[in-house]
Every structure is written in C-alpha cells, then in structure tokens.
Length: 125
Image (cartoon, rainbow, N blue to C red; front, side):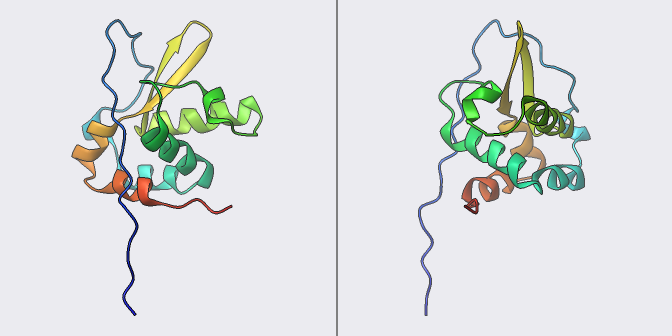
C-alpha cells in the first residue's frame, strides 16, 4: 500500500535586525562537527526547541520563556547553552535575558538537509 507524506514544513528564516548585541561564544561554521550536532539533537527537549524555532518563530530571536516549557530555569539554561556550544543556535545577551535563534544558513551549508529532517520530525506526546 503506498504511503503519502504530508506537506513539507516550511522553515521560517527571519531577517537579522540591525544593531544586535554580539553573539555569545560559539563555534565557527567550519568547526561544527556532525557527531556533536547529532548528539545534541538526540535529546527530545533540545530537538523540540530547535523545531519550534524553525517553524514557529514570531521574531528574529526568542527568550526561553517563549517556548512555554515546563522545566526549571536552570535546566532550560543548560539546554540552550548546549545547543549554542554545538553551533546549532546563536544566543545574544539583551540586558538580563538571552535570546536564541537557529543558525539556519550555517547548518544548511555544513550539513545539507539536516534542518529539513528536524522540521519534519513529529514530537511524541
């Protein structure tokens, strides 16, 4: 019996506004390692964070509160740091808060098709 795939999710890439704070430390695009990125995305919560940023972004970058995740702030801070240190997301400090967005251009250049797989992933309830 043939199967039909649903529509391909559309990854939102919003333009970078002018006057942003400098990004927090992160690897250069050519330093990102596939095994590191896959290891980071192997965690369902981090995969959910990246997928939500790819498909539901309302602005260029978001605070951890935007995600609506029922986790302690210290746990979320850890997950966002791991994503940034692997090169999956870019974070900037805005006063007391950090905001994140996915490094779509860098990841697509380094690992073509990876973000399409993340966007097409269906989280388990």
